[in-house]
Amino acid sequence: MPELIALPGDDPVQVRDGIRRALDGGPAIGLGMLPAPGREVPEGTAAVIATSGSSGIPKQVVLSAAALRASAEATAARIGAGRWVLTLPAGYVAGLQALVRSALAGTEPVLLSGSFRPLVFADATLVHAAGADLYTSLVPAQLATLLDAADDPVVRSALRAYRAILVGGQSLPEAIRERAEAVGARVVRTYGSTETSGGCVYDGVPLDGVTVRQVEGELRVSGPVLADGYLGDDALTERVFVRDAHGIRWYRTGDLGLVDDGVVRVHGRADNVIVSGGINISLDRVERVVRGIPGLDRAVVIGVPDERWGEACAIVAPRGAALRRTEAEQLEQARHAVASEVGAHARPTRLIVVDELPVLASGKPDREQIRRAIADPR
Image 1: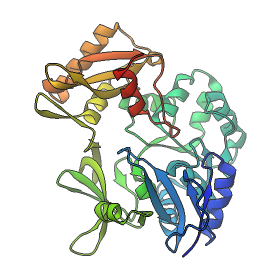
Image 2: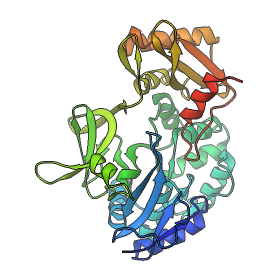
Image 3: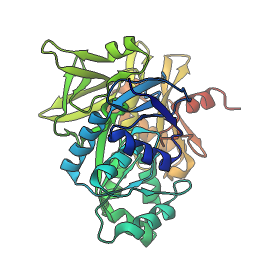
């Protein structure tokens, strides 16, 4: 069996070189893992990515070269091939895929230096924009940061320079999508996970070769982009990757949703639910409604203890989100919107404004840290 070489996921040059070798049959790379000399992986493995995903449970996802290639090739068939600007950590699947897509397109990826900042992004973009088909992947918070700076003509020109900007990692608020469209950015909403080699559904439509279906409310995915499983955890692999009566292998996403006339609609995590007054409430669904309110498009909705109902929804919003009314008025608007779209039982009871929301290295909100901070405000 092939050997696994652990690499620091925060060094994009090492990851770029390592994944190129792995795609050509070289040693597999391990990202986000402690060095383990002599550790073996299944034949055909290109990368093993350590991730806690949405569940918070650490996992080591085994991705074959074939799966990474299938994902990259399906992406190229959908949006085109060219040069990718790496804005996300190379140790996460979205960042890794920017490197894989560049390798398969025969182009050199653009690697940003330092932390993500609008002018750094813009300068790196415009230096390489002439005569190139440019692509990038962002999380919603990064896109919002760029849009906040889009009054600067340099940033605005950079946003318009891309043939496609993939946005994933979490649900994209409609208000942010509309702002992006207004400045001329070509945004593609993506849905997927490390277990699907990254985004496998673009603007609600599965990539070629990918099938999504709903089983008892849960979305399941099949196709050549699926991971082989979890390194060293056969029991978890068997639970999450299942075969149907026809022998087709499916990934159980743990996400609630539906497939309507070929369009995938994701409602949220099956496990991101609280029970308030005996009624189950999807925090993801409430958050989606809240983020549609001007000034709350970066808010996070969490569950908090409630003396009357046991648990209730609370909104945590960054002060930089340009709250447009008093906090009481903003909360009342959110309560009205949630009551109309979800039900009165799901109305948030609190709006908590913070200087900034803690985020993970991937750019997603660090929900666990947010919960701890709210529970112990000291």
